[in-house]
Figure 1 (cartoon, rainbow, N blue to C red):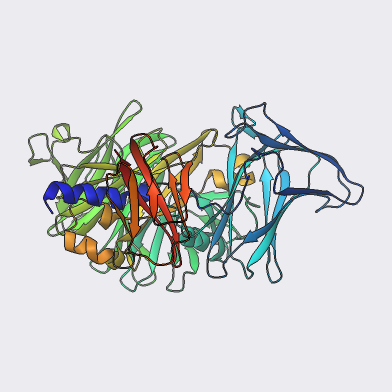
Figure 2 (figure 1 turned 30 degrees about the horizontal axis):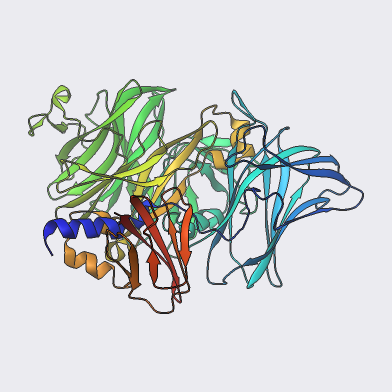
Length: 580
């Protein structure tokens, strides 16, 4: 196989992770066929109406559901919407996700999943305002497991007033992009008083296998996995959550539970996390200093002793400039610092370096990679290596590096690849199109090492959410407006710099093959037994043809890129192909 043919095949077979179509377990979750598959129930002399409406801008499609509760008798379960007979697997993780808004603030709504052995629920507070926006669609989610083959979903409305609902989805953990396992860990494994929601979840694997998750602004409280809102509004500017080897999450902060304090403080403003590394058996964390919303043009480096992560000292590095340090990478004799340059609404990445072991030395000057491909301490000579803020950089192998980020004011989670820590960076790939929410900013796209990442190539990724209005009441009522969302991607497979032999080794668990690719008329499926269904989807997620045989007639399709979703005895696989 020549190099060009190989690259085409790799790109087509590996961009499964770009495709973000959800694995749906609900039919008519968007009410496009009115209330088909749904039941309504009004108990105990309560009064309510369920209306399918096409006005007032549905979240998607043509329809949405309006629930108008005019009389409520009991505190719960007076007015219900029910979806019955959801097929589930006791070995899987599930997430219900939907979009909602209301005509009144803090409208209480419960979702309960019920089976013979299953009974789990979550309470939501659907809000009516979002800063200067009114009645904007917001995304809500809840992760759960099932102990039954079939369950039903009960939705109860417990506030007098009007609710609007659209696009209910139940997604399982075979989703090619969303990382439900990590999301469930953050929902269910928080222990004791501590982190409740926040942003900028930088992670560092500690020498003993634990993970330090380092956050910027964070709300504190008592965790409750069955509430999608916050009972308390205490916030501090940075903290660390330690993930132990069993996945339990414990929060480290200064002060006491009755009077919690920011872990690393600044005399000039506040410190928000940039990134962290392990050096000389210490956790070294770089923080950016801010005064209100203005950057103070300096960065502090904190040192934590191991294994207890005790804060030893904080010093201010020699760097003082217009850039904002975002990411760190240790490589050979240097530590590389990836900085964010701002120009109006535009964001760019530049890279500096210091000798290994000198990041927390205030006398060490940073050298920037320049426009002439040299290194210089003069920041004005620094080269823009990516036209977006790079938030994480990881080494995938020799001569194989990846950078992640969300371009400013964008809904694209992107990665770039390079053969050196300083570039050139290219092969930009959009891993995920972030679902839209009214008045919510998407930012800070990070890559997280997991214990298995080195061998499988699958990394956990995340982006943060923040409301433009930034109001604490809204963040407390809907903690999903200020929460990391977790994804997964096989970055080694996606990288054009991963050797072919390594790519083949990573694929040993999935031998499915589609050919010819590109295809003009007939697409063939082989390499897997007991194929039960094959769906062909376009890149918007619409099913354009479907069959139960191993050959698919694609002659009627328009030219372009499609996804073959193959359901078989061992699960579901996606493969991309081109229709000629």
